[in-house]
Length: 68
Image 1: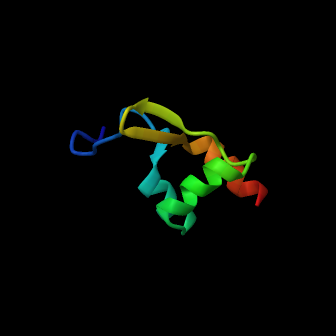
Image 2 (image 1 turned 30 degrees about the horizontal axis):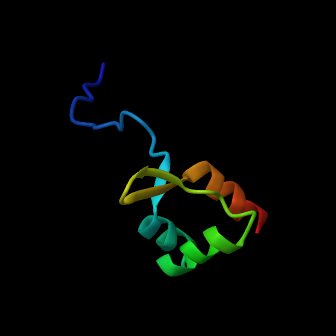
Image 3 (image 1 turned 30 degrees about the vertical axis):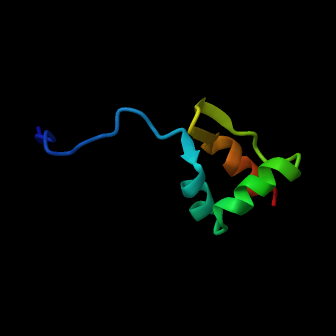
C-alpha cells in the first residue's frame, strides 16, 4: 500500500470568489464586477461577510457564465 502522507488534500472545496478573484476569472475589472452587481439583474448577488469583505458564490457565478 502506497504512503500518501506528503500529498496535501484541501479540506473543503473553495466556495466563494472575492471581487479581485471574480474579476480575474471573468477577464474584467473589479469596477465592472461592481457595475454588473448593481445594474444586471441576472448577475449573482454578493454576500457580505464583514464590513470589508464581500464574496460571490462560485457555483452561482459559473451558472451565470454558462448562460452567457
